[in-house]
Length: 315
Image (cartoon, rainbow, N blue to C red; front, side, top):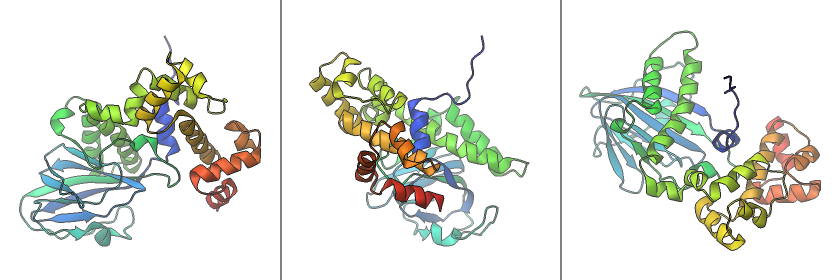
């Protein structure tokens, strides 16, 4: 049997690509107690830290929520919430951005710390498109902790070990490998965390994909965004009435079915516009015969005219 595995399309892959997930910063941090670093909040980025060696605390800004981290633990901040990483919650933090701002790839700088117990962190952040809602992050908490004992013998552990090995290396292609591993780490961490939190799965977009009623409808929309979808057409795929389906869809996805259809169409359209495709062609590809109707819907959902987005990205 032969099966091609490259470029297989699924809903998660489409959404990850559409929201422009990408590693915009990856770093290795070595510190000795006492130390504490504050990472400022940014709603357009999701950050993560891996404890490669030693131990520390992660604390969310303004909430008092904190968690102790040990070797191999992963903590992700899906919504870009400001947070502190430190040897002790009581240690006064310094601004991380002020210490490393302007550094070029490969450059190093000494960080303020003591000579006590050492800790090594592998850190990174992912950029997301600013326009529109991000279904990928719906239902996830501000801080997502995956302990090492929950990842043993799994894909996340393998990614962590590979990242740790590559982060300290100078072999050819190391930078490329690190970038790919950082991307993989995000998806693997989400999988591992959701696998242990059934209640959170129900409230998340990931959970909606697994729902036997909502999942097929979401996949149908992603498979054919240009189709003239109606609530009735989507409901028939679930075997429920329109009203029952609409309630279940809204509970799982966080918005009514046709609102989701329009939002996904505009997400696809934004990606095509950024590639330089003509507005009239993009409108047809996402199900609009009328360019003006498309432009109106695009501006309502994304907050700017399609022509402006196309020109801005081209520039």
